[in-house]
Length: 500
Ligand SMILES: Cc1cc2nc3c(=O)[nH]c(=O)nc-3n(C[C@H](O)[C@H](O)[C@H](O)COP(=O)(O)O)c2cc1C
Ligand code: FES
Image 1 (spheres, rainbow, N blue to C red):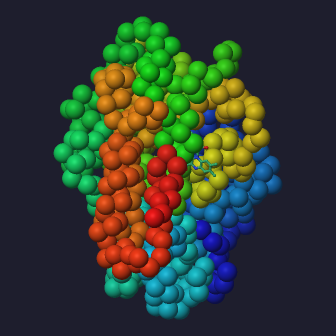
Image 2 (spheres, rainbow, N blue to C red):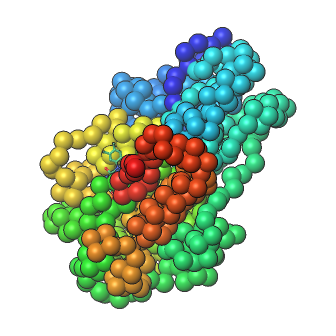
Image 3 (cartoon, rainbow, N blue to C red):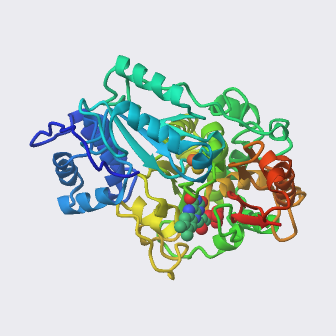
């Protein structure tokens, strides 16, 4: 997100800021989820946003005081991240995606229209402090291009007429901040997102997306009705050696779905054996342009991820897990926070998980707009409450990671697959994919193609399908015989350029 370059709007900033007693108590509860208070720095800045509508210098000094760090530290961290609300931001910030698929879908025209209509440049704020327009990088909503966010909410396939309507409705609704208790800005909200999937996933022929479109698929009741948490329960109540579970994952040949494709079981075996706590960190930073798979898994099936974490944490003998979710997924953050609360209430998490006397904790931690925090060591720096600077390896996180303790970082899709492997066995998982890379793989297809979808079939089938669809597209046919065609198929284990 770019910072305002010009604005006539001059907000009134008080000399000091102070949270209410209730918010201080909330901050203490957040701090208790980390071994070091300063790890609560990013969430504390979110509290400033929620309570005061912005992160400003007096607010940062207050946070520094509460967390026991210097104001310079807070200022330094804040300035690294682009997603926090600055004092010069309007009540409603239109964040228009300017990355490839949205650009192909006409996002430049949408930005121009908003700026023209509001009389401000990109990065500017209207003099009444109501609206700002910003260009942002890929929002992981590429199949709905061109897309934008109005504060927290996504707007799919946005048109100039939608922009006019939103401006009028926001004016009528009035200010959006301070936000609600769940951090949701008040005032105007666009209609909720509609999710799309190919037919085969809805018919249960994939693996991870089979239930994503069913009504209530994000609830605990829905997940339990389809056998959810029974794999984790059986495991926790079994006394099975954790190494057995690592071996199952090794035999299944599961490779990381976050980009590098490293064999998951092998990585788990590298976890250092010492008496320090072991952490499992889920990478939900999904910022790679053109990928929008983890967002769907989080928004529509959060308990599938939580059970995957429980099963993986058992294998790793880890008591504490963190899900690091990209700042631009506020709804995903709320969905996961709700799902985690429900899992605690059901006794699947907490001091007596599945009535075994074992303690298991999961915390969702929201980032704040920094692409580099998808890289695992940058992510860990950010999770510790710092700027998201990557660290030199070795040591690898499995030896010295979060809070200098042995840490496994895995992608959302990777961890979701683990429960299925343990439940059905490695051979079942190997019915899909190839010898060296078994299982299904979710492909994100968007851009100048006939249909823009998420796909969860075996990998080679997905590539063939992708090409077939592209070849049917009029623009492909137009270009036939004139010049080579290139397509970027992101969201794979690695992006794939296909040329002919
Ligand atoms: C610049 C950069 C950005 C990355 N972004 C992501 C990301 O958004 N999500 C992700 O899961 N992995 C991302 N990765 C890969 C992670 O560093 C890490 O390898 C991955 O989370 C490990 O999980 P996996 O083994 O399950 O794939 C990125 C790597 C780099 C170098
Ligand atoms: S959401 Fe615009 S390119 Fe991904």
